[in-house]
Every structure is written in structure tokens, then in C-alpha cells.
Length: 117
Image 1 (tube, helix red, strand yellow):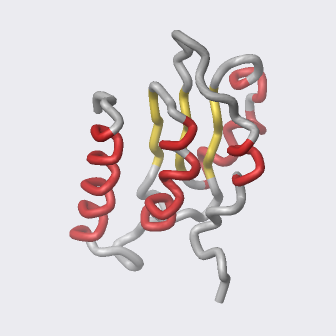
Image 2 (cartoon, rainbow, N blue to C red):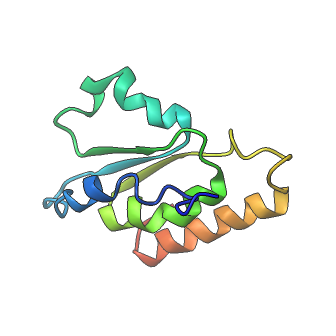
């Protein structure tokens, strides 16, 4: 079994290099699974020179995203978060009540920072 089940270390170095947002910066973090993971390679010019950060991980379930949400999203202090989740989180692996709990857990973190949802 993997010691890093949520792959929380995948972006650790990149996250440590992200400076605080500049005044007026509209930082965007993209969080998700394989589709999100591929965006930066599919169209690098979309990200180039912009405060956009791709934090997708192929095969990632919603539960795994929840575990790394603070490190890969909240700590980057984005103005906007785009979450693409649920594709890998199927009824075979996650009950609907768990899916709702994951989302309910993410939203208070965001509101706690004074951000609108």
C-alpha cells in the first residue's frame, strides 16, 4: 500500500515556490483528476504568464483531493478554484453520502478564508 495515498507530495516542491499573491492578482487553482492533470500539457499557453496553477492528479478520487486540498489549494491563496471531481469517484468506490460529505467539507474551508462560493 502506498504511504502517500492522496499523492499529497506530488506538488509539494511546486507549491513551495509559489509566492504570495500580488495585490489585485486573480490567482486561479485548477483541482481535479486526469482531465485537469492534462490541461497544462494540452494547452501550456493558457497557463503561461498567468497566475494559474494546475493541481490535477490522474486517477484521483474526491476523497484523495480532500486530503490534499489545504496544501494544493488553500495555501496558494487563490481568488478562484475550479474543481473537476467525481469522474473517478464512482458509486463502486464511494457512496453518495460520502460524496456529499466531501463537498460539505471543502466549502467551509473556503468560507473560513472569507471567500465567496
